[in-house]
Image: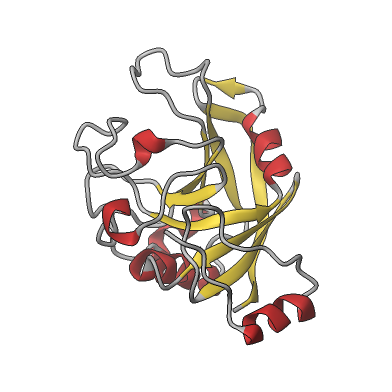
Length: 204
């Protein structure tokens, strides 16, 4: 997918918010973009949310953000090459979820927006929704470390081959993502989960 420049108003808004100008990563979508900042105990992660390309998934994430359900949530899982002994297809991601006390406020599961249809891809820094079966994602999301094509439609990480729904891209703070990934784990669970202090919308 070719890159398209943002509208001049969005560029100006990025300057006003004090953000670096960040174009969508190669292979990711341009268009209607919301910028969010995930503030964690280990540092901040800034990401673009692609409302045009993945409207259902993006709006679901932004609705949880608006309700404050990610505040006091946690990054609780680190999947690395050395802790997947039973997986023939290995990936590298960190996974986060809402504050456990807020689970009663979770919304209904959303339809799966396949990468085949959105044109987005599980590249380094992609934000995507965790799920069991298709159309089961709710609030848990993950961030890719390095490119993870096996998570795209047709990939074999999930036996159903439907892939996972990318809806955003880290544009600043991959050092924080990688730091979280290196935390001590028990299996794939972080022994000391990383608190999400808040997630806020900063542009768009």
